[in-house]
Image 1 (cartoon, rainbow, N blue to C red):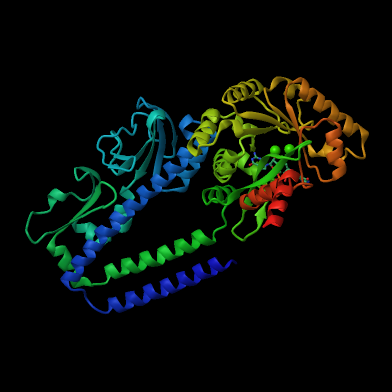
Image 2 (tube, helix red, strand yellow; image 1 turned 90 degrees about the vertical axis):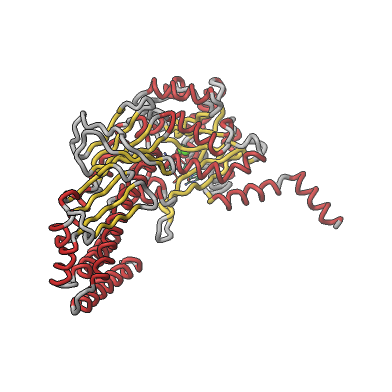
Length: 529
Ligand code: C2E
Ligand code: CA
Ligand code: CA
């Protein structure tokens, strides 16, 4: 058990003991009327906090979904959204609307019928969100809409009515009315009828407004009910508080200690920025200049261990998380290297792209969007597309590759010689770079055939007007063999293993320092000084 879990269990235990103690102490005495009223106000406040918390959840989910391809109604993203809905009892529906306001698609967990579209009727504004009362839907439902501009909007529908039953004590429920309002005008959810209460001045009415969202809570409790409750015992507010504290503590422990499934863990790791870019240099032959690098994903685990990509990339691909993972990784990578690229205009940054992601609609737009957001020149970007996995929709892939190249982005075919399609991938998929797999490099010194294959691929690349990179170069012998066979660039442990950003930039700087002319100049300056 980790230290965090032990601490959490100890805290929960203390919370339960403290709650029990408080209950016992308060149970021994009746509460004054003032205390009762304060407790009533406390109930309204708790209810408002509960509503705010659900809206917070809805906003977090919408923000996350916006980064996934749900706006394009991608089926994998819709499935992921549906899983989110299932995991949250208050969620009913997540819908995507076009810029014309028409429904495009939805991930629906509550079988809401088509005529109950979440049409916004009343709204309040807060940082790009709108809150609405879905027309035709049963009371107790609030829709939170992300106004995402030109490409439409996303809306999450959440249920609020359950709170009234589960959080408001039975003693009040029997005599009182409770309502949640939107914009102080529209009833979102209510329990009891406010009109059945007399307008007698002794009736207690309490209103609490949220400071963050356009929602408010109103309670109306007859004086008699307060006296009833006070006469019976002053226990219930304390009991409720104690119960809520104990349940909250237990839920917290359960959340912390329950084993997460691997997809949840990966999603959490991506969101927490635990998937980090490492950089491996690519060196030009024969100049020895660092002409670029490859970005390789590493999972910086919470226990400090580094998890290699073959342990999580396949899961990211099968769960639909690969898009979010790659986009985040790419943003982080180009953010780290932007300064270096601007100072070294020919420097190429290669990012690995899974075929399943490459084929998603909106792929090109999202890549261009990242370059634009980060101010990174497209001409310095290389996308590596592996030949190892079968490219199912070849014609689509070819069209996407061609249109990316028009924007100046280079396409590199990775792991050439290991795929299903033989050399037809090279012929039919537009590209700029051919990456020769490590397995041919490994055996080049001992096996003549490997050397011949490399020479053949280098010749073919020239004929197609492409350059070649050989990866996995570990020895001087392999480097010489690559140079002899006309390979343009090399990458491998002979130069450096993949490094974190800071170390990589230091490595580049140190390598520049050993370029002969510069070394001589520096030496003479130092001697003169
Ligand atoms: P890859 O694209 O073929 O990457 C080259 C792999 O060879 C890297 O392994 C690199 O560390 C390793 N390598 C480079 N030079 C040498 C060498 O001289 N000797 C040896 N023994 N190995 C060398 P890594 O980083 O473990 O990545 C493994 C694979 O995981 C990658 O193969 C790529 O297919 C995948 N991958 C890594 N990052 C990403 C990513 O961000 N997205 C996607 N879709 N796939 C990724
Ligand atoms: Ca690669
Ligand atoms: Ca490779």
